View 1 (cartoon, rainbow, N blue to C red):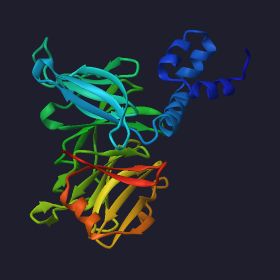
View 2 (view 1 turned 180 degrees about the vertical axis):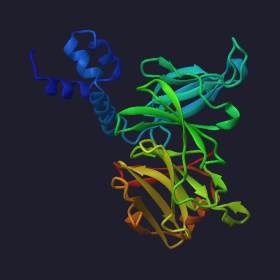
View 3 (view 1 turned 120 degrees about the vertical axis):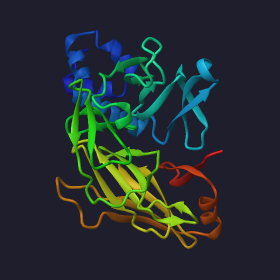
View 4 (view 1 turned 120 degrees about the horizontal axis):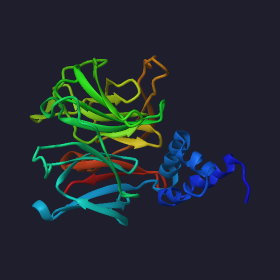
Length: 324
């Protein structure tokens, strides 16, 4: 059957990765389409928007020591299991998960007996691993690695930095070039830095964390700002929450970064405005939705250790996932 290349792209976008890997060997024209960076980006976008909408990857460690393993599952926001993808050995540290790719390090290299050896990017759907070259900065100079995607160059990158020194050197790995570089950066809109949430959210080409400027509530650091690491500019930016009197949580709404804030009177959702080129919007947030709240709802978020807030597009509901 003869089809124009654009029509084949539409057909290929609906196929899983394992099928595409087999189709690459059918003919040269198909390989060209499937291997093109533009198609890879479009396939990921189609996959995220349709196949796995409102689903989460759950990594569960089972067993101890050398017998442990990591079980990777696909679940709904309610933790109802949809499918089990694969298992990998548990003697490793998972740094990040993006588009189904895992960035991890083994704890100890069994051959050289070195602690935290080479970084690896693992694709559990096709069971393939990319071993990164040695990082140019020593482990004690980098204590955070993040996996991200730069849509402007269609390139996956790994950025490493030291949490307490965001306005210093960082290391950047490019999958396209298969090499590291060291870069000196300054954090825009710098504030006194006291603490950063371990969990982050990736959208619009940037990783986003909740962070504190030193404010305390009942003796505990209160998250007051959003810290963003842009993978195109390879720099940090900091934005204050739209309403600091509420309990705030980050989540991804469609293609945008959103904040869910709740008090005893109301619950609001704000959307972070996107930078246009090098211009930063004067009003960084706009109010997307506002509803009445209650003291019971406020106390639930205040008293429980909320692990993650996620938005279900089908039901239009906000889920607060608690840690047990």
